[in-house]
Image (cartoon, rainbow, N blue to C red; front, side, top):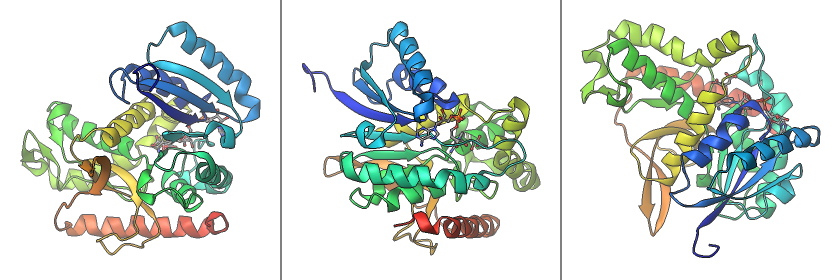
Length: 331
Ligand code: NAD
Ligand code: LMR
């Protein structure tokens, strides 16, 4: 608090990149950290991009956001992550057309190894960490494994973009408004093996199969959601940025306010599904208050549909393979 106003310290990495350019104004404008809460922005970039970042800072200053408390920029995570409440880890190399996200593993793993270590050393112990840089699930695993002093329940990988994409596809196909689509779950990896689960989803309170043919759901729907990132990349020649920023903002909101079921990657230790216990896996979560603190619990969605169960296994196997590839970065 400064003078009665709540201030929250938020680190954003890769802030000079294309997601950063949409994300930072969006976070401020949507007041996701609470109405009237001021944000101490701590922006991290590689040294070569700090000058670019200073340009963004000038633009933020010139836009007159009332929600900014202060802005700090730098290239040392041990400085920028000092005492932060939130870390939004966007900074990483993005894929080019023709690549899969896992092709970025080798390039990006070190970033998350170093940033995990820095979080462990200097961030608040109750910091919440949202990993966006791809491949997001495995980068999140690297980060949390290198930050053992921070509870594993505070780490998340972004799959809210996949949820938003799936919701749009269902609303569009059924010819209904987006707001009517509920309970779309994304299981597994943020990759083409992801599992956009339509079997729990409802439109206007009724199961989606009352409106949409099962063949389309298992075929075109699955494929279009799983490959949407690639389709955006092919069309723009750059990966999604505006929709990614929107999904990050949605996810932060989901984590800050009890707001129904949402999907995000979380650590699988102690999971009740029988999955490998050392992965970051997208699953249905709900934010709930416990002992005066907001925590995320996994929502029980009942038995898996056999088609969905088989797809989940394939996504799990892919994540196990990704983990093998970054073995040297796991503490
Ligand atoms: P970009 O290339 O426009 O920006 C990335 C920024 O990160 C650059 O400014 C770069 O200098 C910076 N950076 C690189 N290494 C860094 C480090 N060690 N510390 C701090 N900053 C660093 O890319 P973008 O479009 O903003 O995407 C960023 C990442 O997010 C990519 O990996 C992309 O694949 C991923 N992404 C994930 C999702 C998701 O849903 N999980 C969605 C969209 C994009
Ligand atoms: C997306 O889903 O749009 C991002 O993960 C970027 C990408 O490489 O597809």
